[in-house]
Image (cartoon, rainbow, N blue to C red; front, side):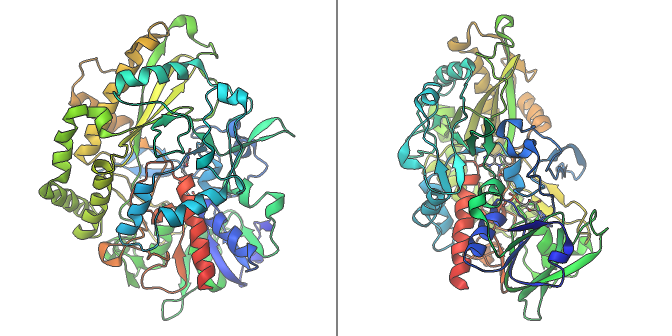
Length: 589
Ligand SMILES: Cc1cc2nc3c(=O)[nH]c(=O)nc-3n(C[C@H](O)[C@H](O)[C@H](O)COP(=O)(O)OP(=O)(O)OC[C@H]3O[C@@H](n4cnc5c(N)ncnc54)[C@H](O)[C@@H]3O)c2cc1C
């Protein structure tokens, strides 16, 4: 494998395949295609940080660091710039180089819904073998199990490239044990199980992380897509070139809209001078939810209004490009630890692994018998229509039928499959214990579009978090319950103030919670949807073989193709999606 930042390695050359973006999707596809002997070029906007411990050591991760991070600007619903930015991986490995490393699986019900939405062949039976094949789970030892590591051998793979395990040594603080005991006080009926990858019966448990213990350094290493599929000595390829530090501007097409190559350049290496490189068999966009839609738009593919506003001539009308942006809107509440226990690391955590215990909560566990109030509203046809209309009017859906189809998918997962609507993670720090949470299957949607034809300018991202009243109701209810959780008997001696943050009293109103949520909410970093895989008439951007409608030899393989949110963190699903995509590409080759 050649990893370089010299444009000459690619400029004016011809490869079988060009892949844009060396993140989760791009590296998975690149690894598989080059493994079959095809010549593959991956063009990555960011650098190779294989030397940087912040990227390769799991516990050297710096939360919201600027290293390997696009820090995309983000817009409020009125179009004004928010003070916060969006984290997204900007180096080889993409977001897997900076993410929280939490690994567990989605449910069969939701994966099967990909097929019922109009994508033949995308169901649990076709996806789960890929999920298993990519994973190399290290079964926890007795000490790790004693510390809370979950073990269910049936729900992992053991011979793949991506390592999943628990840290060595494992040291889960006691606050997490208390949190487990307190959960049923806040969410009646919520049971604590062993391994959250078992989604048939477990709703609250520990999860594995994408890490492996490196005995040579004595550190837990991050098993990013780069670590697993690119840098690893047993994954070297004769026919794979990765060009780092170069941004892809747009796709080159022949007259019949066959993708023939890409235009790329670098601000730092070539001072913005652009070059061309050609593909015999195809171009694959894997630039992520915020990267692939803008490349399509700069190539003249997308919604007429967005392209006109950015000053780009339209070649292909695909109104779904950049619409349907979705992430889970996250925030946290905190309780103050009693003075006697502050900085006691047996109680609270000084470590940097995210979410040692994760709970997934459905509408019954949140609202009990009152859940029917919400279900009645969700199944009402007039409510569905007005939700869909609101999304179309906001530019968050291409058309009413598409918006209804996507909303209905999520609503039926919430009501019929009784899947969780909120995720809750316990985190403890020297002086506080926090409950981080987010509505898990939001109905709100936003959009991403380019502002200009400039390849180096950031896109305009408007998430429109919590614009749907159901998402608001979930967030408010869970926020209130997390405070009951810290006030529950198991925390009696350990917590001094269960209502530390937000500064809202025990009897705070919905309005107070909503005002607080609108100030503190940011994405859980599971961004999806802007190049959705769906029938074209519903506003889809790619078909069930991930080919961009109206083009030839052009595919998208990244998080953007997922049309609706899933109830696990994204990696397990996306590795399976990318691996299946590689099989489809190879079959077509
Ligand atoms: C902070 C954070 C925490 C997360 N935590 C978790 C977690 O704990 N568990 C989990 O399962 N998931 C987590 N995720 C989500 C998961 O990492 C992503 O969903 C996944 O990596 C997306 O894969 P992708 O291929 O779509 O994009 P990425 O992996 O982000 O790769 C896209 C790549 O394309 C490159 N690129 C973009 N534009 C261009 C261009 N024009 N030219 C060339 N290259 C370009 C980018 O630099 C990047 O390297 C987290 C994500 C983040 C950001």
